[in-house]
Image (cartoon, rainbow over all chains, first blue to last red; front, side):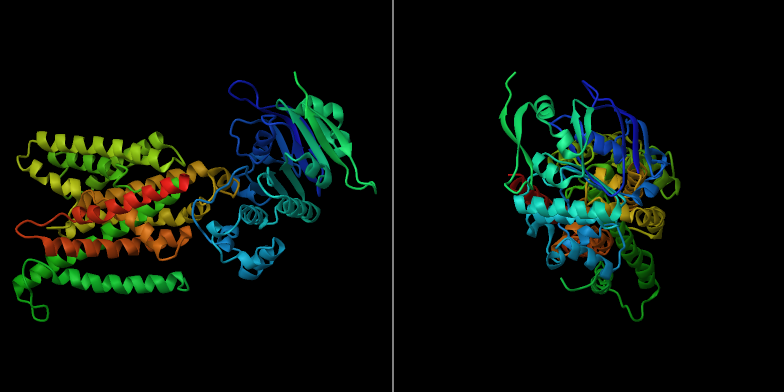
Length: 248
Length: 323
């Protein structure tokens, strides 16, 4: 569904992403992991076509993705950036339907999916950070995009909201297409993602299922931590747990 | 707020018509409206009515320009007057008028002033940048406004026309006094050209509730739409400046008045600001006329007296929000 060929993005002191080649299938939640500055956001911004200096080729459903017009791309794409603060204190339903013209029943159905129906008349300033993030995600998914890109959608949220959002991302992937999300919490990434992309210094170190990617060696190399996998007694819910930082 | 945009629009329009009636009756001489003689008829049709029509035209230009600037720059303090955009348009107008480049009521005048407006708005974008902090925007605006104001003063002082410098107050503070249909004709083309541009870019402006990065993924070519909106702001600013000088703060007050009555969505701010600006300018002009004695008080003085405290309140609120 999505093919990246030799993606490269120059930075000020070093390349932000280096020669990334990758092919991703549909109906997957793909987590992009890596330490700060690894190139996760740059990769996602590149795929969202908001990095003007990106070189290489992106193919989406066999089309030249970067060659499409803004309007053509918008038919497939939903995007939630790392930090998003609505400038005007609009109502939640207005925020979700911003610049779109979806009819009220369709909007209400979508608000219900994201548990926002009861909050729809509240203003952005009157809801919690988690509720606002849910509303922003609902806005990004309103057009049911086949490619959804979220940059750290759960950072700064409490555990319950993190789980809700991750579940919604997974649901979206199952029903509509491919979801790419940068995630810092490795346990969440391991639990919810079908596939992980491990980034380090702008390079794609490994791509695969969580248990293939989150190895002790990879975690030591890319995050500088000594980590182990823990599991519950019944064998379900494996989580990689960083134990301590490795000193140079 | 339970009123729809249309209901609110109709109410504001009703009040504007009432205020227009009030503005028409205020003036140096009392008139017999039901059976005017020839002189009174001239006063009504050549002085009072053009003044009211001009007030509407200039207010629509100021209100819409203020709303577009605030939505475009995602900044509640943006306004053509206090950011110096009007000053730059006025500077070019003054230069062409007092150095005799163009006759006073030539349609080349708004076209030439548009260059000044475009220069001002581009300079503001360059100095403050997109999504600039309110402080940075105000600093850039103050620099441009001060420079254009000083240059205006210098040009008027050096102008070969001996009465030019006496016009300083008009250009600096803005005035709707002693206007004719010519002034209306100078203002209208800019407003008429800008309205379709704003209509074309309206969804882009609504989307700019979110970051430019997100807006770029919502189907908008950001650079193209931004340039289109800057052109609209320059056209609107120029239209108001060539006809009535630099009237500050109306473009700031109108969008905030709309938000104050509970309409926060950019859609309401954009389309209710012009009618709100009409109410404000009609009120200010009526007050200015009532307060005038031998010489008429420039309407910009009243606008600044009301607008400047609001600017201070907004700055304090921004500071509290940042803290």
